[in-house]
Image 1 (cartoon, rainbow, N blue to C red):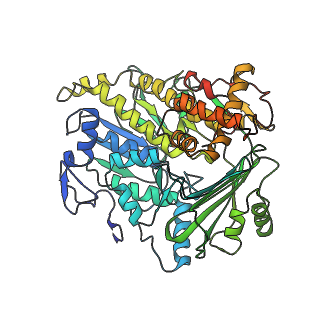
Image 2: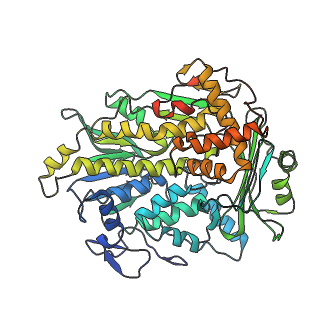
Image 3: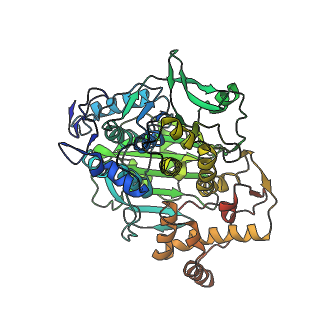
Length: 555
């Protein structure tokens, strides 16, 4: 199909020569070592051809699944990507002069992605996530921008209201991203994935179980609801929060992992707008939070074709109404008038809809790893309150880590017998999930820390009693959240950590501590949270212990 973004067809119809992929920046095929393969191979220090004669199946074609499929195609001779949904594999014309036609297409694509219940909600791909995709597929950012994604500076293009303070557009810290709908992010990425010669995509392929060799205690493939069985040397479950992985493991007689949940009753209320031209509007992203109460939030972001997505969020007791009058009144009652002023004369191009599946959920595979032949990534392992915008990027980081672990396991096996290569993957699930647990500890804490303090929060996770140290840490982060509004350096550090470009340890450096203490001495802060942490700290892992009581650390 010819589109504004190039020519894309379904897998199997796309002419790809053996040993080649199509580089998005080129019109002709190039050797894989010159593009995706070369870049990944130089990263992991291995050869340009697939490292093994093995095969892999990826369940789910969201961000984690698409990324994993692309990365694993460099180590496995054949990769099959399965998705329960049926959707077109082409990037359609996103720039339309008829807003109604664009809206109809967008809504149709949303309905097709039944496996991604939050598909039409605003999504922000953090700079780290964008860089990870560009690492796999050079040219992704360029094509995304050509399709209408908005280039934004995540400070100079943003107006942020929090703690009765306002950050106005103008000052930059160099953190950038491309704002787009989930539909555009994913569809452009799928276009790149379809160009990989040893990767095939099978849609309308719902998995209902795992194939298993009891003698070898190894997963050997998947069973589809259609009755078909697919063999594989490695199965990767990237099917999301509602994965049936625990049920599948029980069917094999393998104990599923324990879980942790924090559900604070947050509801998203969503609408999409066309915005009129306004020379007075200097911002591209608007964020409003009502700390220290932290009951209501609002986020407005631009996407392709001059559309803007708005989420008005409220915790239990503060949900935004779903009728026109109530929706506007909720926006008007926010502590900052910015968003209400922006939408009161804007044209709605969608209905008002609510999304309530916003709880934090984690499967502790690091304590009970899957059997050999099976790894789990993305939201199937850990999903967060979506307000933090971490999900897509953490999923991409998980697929990068999986490829790294596989590369280490297979090192030195190229050209050897297939059984020797398969044996080299023994122990991979335990190794990978141990490291993945450490990776998700910090974003998990960022998400559950504030939610666990809500009086109506429903939790299933270990807790410890609050102590003087944890209370001091809470006050430290609350002070830091306020002080950043008066200091570009502090705002830059917090933003870099929030976008996973820097370690959380930088927030405890002498430079940050010194600036923060200076703000305290000047009396510019409301030192301390809205209420003491009486529910204790959450036991979420050693890597995150220092921030387990953070109240409102959102970046």
